[in-house]
Length: 198
Image 1 (cartoon, one colour):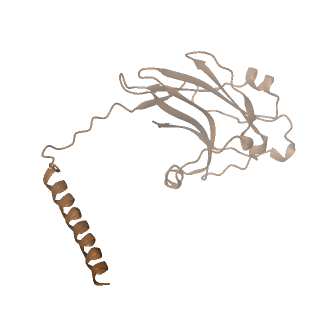
Image 2: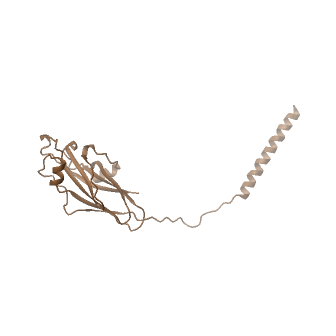
Image 3: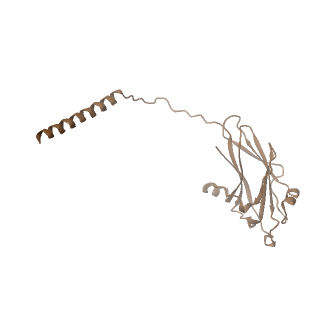
């Protein structure tokens, strides 16, 4: 029994010595260095500009329910241009949103308000029309919604712009042809906002 104890103690002692030797060797051969210069980060240009066309804003005063063909031929669209003002750097992604406002709040049911967003430049692309109430909701930060007085933000288009390039859109809004007399004297207040991100 005594010899078994000595063998166990001998093996334990050898294991402790090996562990100490490995730990000492590792600390002796490991290299530690300290940074003396500050880290420097260079950012690229990230800026877009938004400009309205000469027609100002959308005016739906004294409008009436109509089909898309009549709306596109009779209404003056709201024209706006988004420009990546950087001359170098990465492409900038953007999202075009139509936002309902809290003050004054709209009384027109969004299930009766139609929209169509067409790209006119650099190439002409016909957008799809739809009811604003059926458009996908753009997820906005609560503080942005509060600061801008936004009730709901609807996503109309997304894209990206290379440095120095621009895109122009025409937005049409009209009352759907299936709307009833219940929409008489209702109002819609909204704002087009463009959000840019990397």
